[in-house]
Image (cartoon, rainbow, N blue to C red; front, side):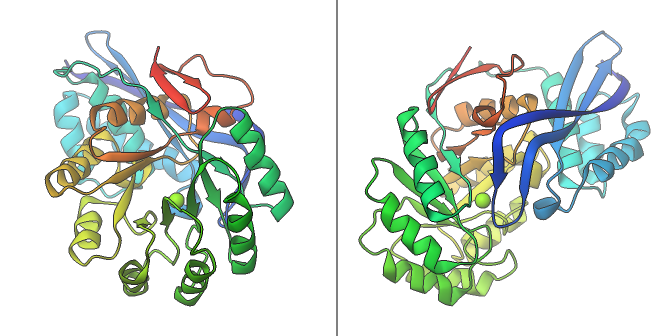
Amino acid sequence: MKILDISTEVKEIALKTPFITALRRVDAVEFVRVKVVCDDGSVAYGEAPATRAVTGEDIYSILSDIAFIQEELIGLTPKDAIVSLHLAEMGSSAKAALDMALFYLLPQTKEKQNLTLQTDITISLKDSDEMISDATQAIASGMNILKVKFGGDIKHAIEVTNRLSELDAKLIIDANQAWTQDDTMEYLEATLNVKLELIEQPVKADELHELRCITNYSHVPILADESVFTLEDAKAIIEYACADMINIKLMKCGGVTKAIEILEFARKNDIKCMLGSMLEGPISINAALNLAMEYSDVIAYIDLDSPLLYKEPSNELEFDFNGCEITRK
Ligand SMILES: [Mg+2]
């Protein structure tokens, strides 16, 4: 089986309400969908959203990266194409879109797992009262793990966290790099009585020394997100004890093939992971959820709530979302 054609299109899915973090605000999920066709008639799809704030890529760079490499991949087997793809210098999301399509075209040796998984739901960064109201609404609609987005205003983060502690839900805190080491220490002191699952990426991606000091000091587990793209990053973070856990996202590591390498490393070293996503389309969420089912022993947290944020449900999902529970269709 050889690759005959690769094509792309840009798609958009409207959101129920805007998604707001310390890094950005968006009203719709916009992504590139790539279609790979083989000479035996097999067809597979991949997707990549533009998340410039994290991966540095926009829709145009994803399209141009795919256009740049596609001639090299046409005529190869999917297996050889995956090797060529990962040798190329290009954006990690563009790679992820191609990788997930090519991975799907490989002979599938493992049976697909069918578990009930739980995803968290994002509570966007807003003023305090709105965040409490959004959280209350999310809990009422069946969610029980909240991923709460904060920005640089540490007093606001402390106030909202203390108020959220009165609600009946597990709390994951994501600062998206907005805090300093001092902010984080202040936050930890002021929320000592609140049970937190973890704090995600308090400081800037390259502030590994600060991240390590925080991890060493903190009674709450620290999760590295923007600091970890590749397997090498994951190894360094763990070796130098910069964080307790890592957040794996297909768009950061370059797709399913690379995510599996990180998950195998985590499994061997008994490191718990979060499997996360950007705001993504249904095909890349399917790819992530298939991984989440296969690596449920190392994936302690699932942050794949994009489909819950779509204005209209997607019929391209292989999974049902019922409140926080996810099952295979
Ligand atoms: Mg994060």
